[in-house]
Each structure stands twice: as structure tokens, then as C-alpha cells.
Image (cartoon, rainbow, N blue to C red; front, side):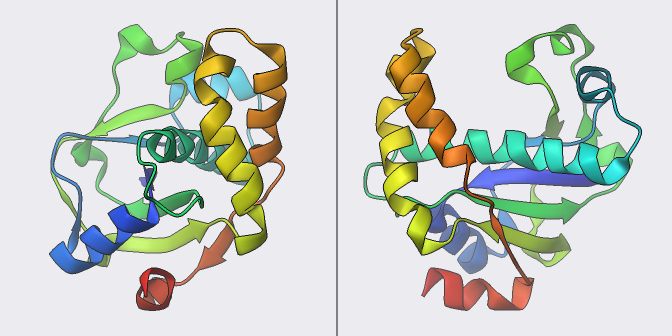
Length: 168
């Protein structure tokens, strides 16, 4: 199963140093039954893009909690055995939990298929979105517009061999 793990550049650097992504249990995003139902598509590429987008939103939340991190969203795409993933069926209809899965064990970075990262020119919009996230969550429409501005930037694809250059 392909899962998308949200992180930050400092988090990616830690994973590179440790050889694994976080400690278990670890939240990630994937094509879940609830995401399929919400997205109403049978196209696996579209569904995986939706899961990647959900992970990018989670990366933005991580940035909002880490003022020192570079203002670039980071998502690591990883292939894991189905048995390594659990889905909480009780959260399936919760819009905030669409696509959320839990990894029951730490994931070796060697399992990563790719890394998705914002381009440098996205940093001002991502920084503004991270700053506005709390107000957007509280219902401020102007702040929601700012947060949505970060989503206008596509994450770039990087091979795992490029991780040292990303974190260097």
C-alpha cells in the first residue's frame, strides 16, 4: 500500500539520520474507503493525488507548530505492507480524517518511493498559510483564503537519492 507521511525539512533530516520515519504509531494518508467515497473517483492516480494533498495539509499543520522549520511542506511517499496499516472505521466519515491511516511500526526510510516538497517560491505563501491556520480553523474566511493559497502550489517530486541535497 502506498502511504503519504507528512513531515517538514527538519523532520526529513531526522529521518535521514535515523534511517526511519518517526516512531510508531505514525499517522499517514492513503487511499481509504472513506477517501474513495468522498472523492467519488475510480482513478487510482486521482485518489493517490487526493491522499497526497491531505498529507500536504498535515505537513502545513506541522509547520504551524514549528516556527524554526523552513516554510516548505514535505510529504514522503512510502510503500508498506497492508498489514502495517490500520484504518479507524469510526473516523471514516469525519471530514478532518479523510484518508488518515495509522502505521503500526516505524517505517525504514529505505522504503520511501519519493519525496514531495514545495519549491522555494512557495515559501511566502506557505509561511502565510501556517500563520493563518489557527484563525482559519476558527472559521475566519479571510484566513481560510490564505491557507488555500498554499494549496495552489504543487509539491515537486524528488527521488530518494536527492534527500541529502534537500536537507543540506
